[in-house]
Length: 151
Length: 289
Image 1 (tube, each protein chain N blue to C red):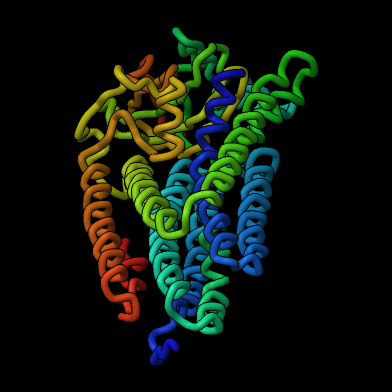
Image 2: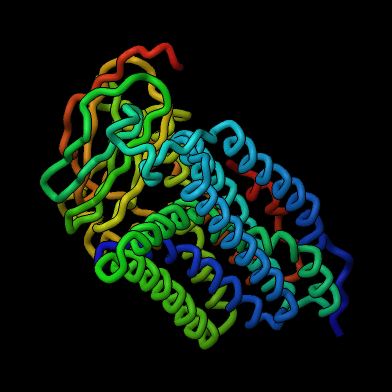
């Protein structure tokens, strides 16, 4: 016969701890979603094409090229619509002037897919890069943002 | 199509592995009544990810880069806490299987049911938003033209499907191993996975500049293990192995892996020596960031 004295239950603290973390998880998800939302200035509505909105840029990426629709933009919320016309999965980065500090990045741009990088950019000099194959320094080019008075 | 297939596989693999190990455990230890909680967690994560992804893709508002990285990074680190809890919970429940009274085990398991739902939810939801954004982008492409542009969506969907099938095969395999061996191997395996998730979370926070040292690499083996190769995909998908790993990532990996595995193996040895002795409370371990 097995006599077992009362010992600590396996899941004794699991519910309160779990509930607490569930609540904080929700808060963590909600917080940046509220703070981090930004207007979608996409190019998919016919009225606002890339050419009319200087803050909506397109990037044509292939395995060997990284062509932006413009090399400068006014400050504010910029949208880079990155289309991968190559065979390799690519990524698009906006770096600071030093070429190291990541201002923004969009990953998993598979062949044939268009994905958007949306971010607020202050006036200054930047470097754009496509990374076909998801490795290395990428295909880099300078990019400048002028002061439009918008933050 | 192959490239998009590999993205889908990579994004789905880790979640599929964690969930299938969890399900295999519940089935093996005769706790099938807890399975609905797992599916609920998975369902909530998939629904939230797809809904947010759709709202951000098609709606009037997008998500800034920083916000997305912050979500990914923080969810990863919280997920590590819960997977760690799950590892030690399974180990404790395994001990009670052999020695303690059945009713007590069930009571304990019931108390943990919502934590199990959260483990499943975080395992799927951690990368769920990024996967959903990727899938909706592929859907957008497929909707644009008809005949030629469905390839990316098809590839991505097939990749996710293969991840789920691999998870199912692991589940079937796990059912055949004996219980004590199952605990040791899955426990150690999950600790390696969790360490990878932690390193990944650190990298996300480094990219969003909440943590420094993004360009301070510990090693870079991108040439030997290209991220686009099938083995690079598997290493990334299962262990979150990044060919270019920062010093901070490597440090976080080691600082999690070495103590957690040591505690796990130490507890396992204690269990074999003195099965009735209560193990140290591992809630502290699950709270570690």
